[in-house]
Image (cartoon, rainbow, N blue to C red; front, side):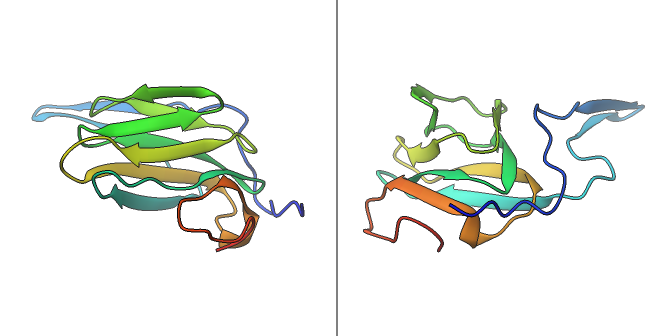
Length: 131
């Protein structure tokens, strides 16, 4: 498989800053860093392909109940607020095990592109690589 990385990819989850304010606080996941942010929504009973990427690492932030996540060989049900680091080239998959759609905020570090996807399993019979 071709390696598509053209931008720096961190080898570990970047530090998350907690910024306190009089009204409360906020967390910064990618402070002045180049990244791609996506909001994924998975329908009940559906799942993404089991995949990996050569050009990016991903930080997933679970927003809703029902998210089932596989990273490597480990599969677990996640709670809203959990943060999951997916290193470059690591197999991963998101499924919705609940009765309502679940959302995960993805912060991708590296070069986000469909061409860097390697699929190992796919319910929709899409190609092994790319879109």
